[in-house]
Length: 396
Ligand code: AMP
Image (cartoon, rainbow, N blue to C red; front, side, top):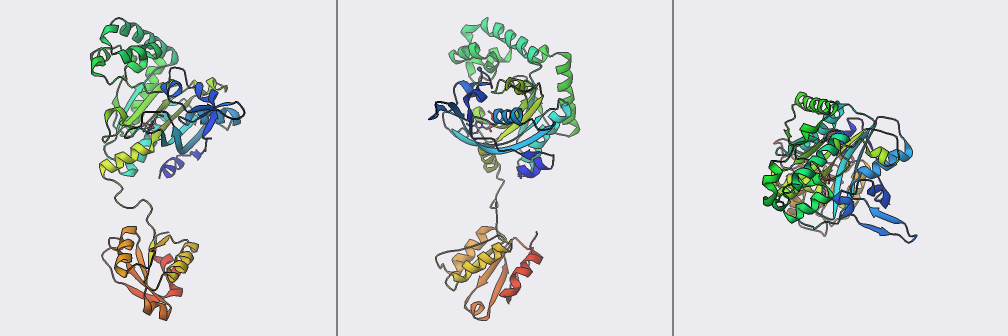
């Protein structure tokens, strides 16, 4: 479904490598926890320092720099990442993401479009409680003036900060704003806000992104403390917050602009924006919101063979060869047990083969509950007519 949403917006798939030279990820920034604390890096047999990817943007941008596709370049991806984390619900050492990156466009409309793709994807999944929070980190110089101001502000009252935040302050003052510790709350609440540091360009860009979201009727909250974990973000940043998870891991997805990253990886100055959505957390959110009641990949038909199973073996094979998704039960179960399995499968029809059908070269086609309106009338037809009939009535 993700592929459908993003491919309808002109994105092509890229499959970045699962591991890269360590240097590719180190460019994500020394103040980034993912790089300093959470990377699975090791030496290979040839003495090269490599790392399992902790996220995909760096690999995508590395590929961009190496292959220089035409601009604008719109790419989407899906796959696992690895971070050395304290594993808990919604936080794993291997987790999946789907995401997009667009390189070569600085238009605020694109920021709104990219956000809308993630928003529409959540909507298509049936999620109704995911909230969007947005912020802008300004241009690099705005951001660094702000970081200086934060350093000065927090340093004035070091004793009031938690020991953990004091350490964070040394590495990355922005991340102190992320602290969930009660002790830090009053200082964080009264901290300087980034919007006071925006250049005219950054302020205008952000205003136009918000106007774009308004045009698309996407509700959002501007949260000045949203800094996100990666160092490379500039201007627009955003996060999608789920209702189901604890606050320390309730972000189901997030992204932003990274206008300096291509240069950092050795390419020409190129604007970039993207997001990554956490598949594991999105599924937890789906569970919590009770979406996905039906099997994710229901087959079209379920073959119920009470003559020993050999007919089911050949019939499912023929059906699949004709492009009709089909499944069956095994181990010579009873009719009742096979019909239960057929109901659970989400199939539209059960194809029943009993002794009579076998003798006369026929099959009985029974519509399953909730699939074809209320009409549950079954019919027995010659086996040779089954596939043409199914092709006529099943949605293609
Ligand atoms: P990030 O790359 O840190 O911006 O993360 C983007 C999304 O990936 C987050 O919003 C989460 O949904 C998901 N994510 C990040 N780290 C983990 C993890 N360790 N376990 C599960 N999901 C994660």
